[in-house]
Length: 88
Image (cartoon, rainbow, N blue to C red; front, side):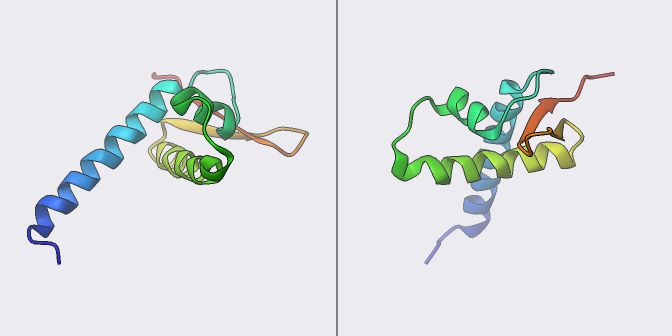
């Protein structure tokens, strides 16, 4: 059982927000794939964890898109690439 559930939830939400901000900091105006962004964030990871890292990065990128901080571009090769949105 979780003894202090409100504190635990708040802590996890802060962690999620921090990681989303770290992900945002790796974005530039030059579109890159989620795999390229993940590699910049974490470097080389074992194949057994690469899928989970990619899913995590995509989740944070999705949050950034929803917040208007990033955009997705699907290129002619069918691969999605992500870029930062310029502050106006």
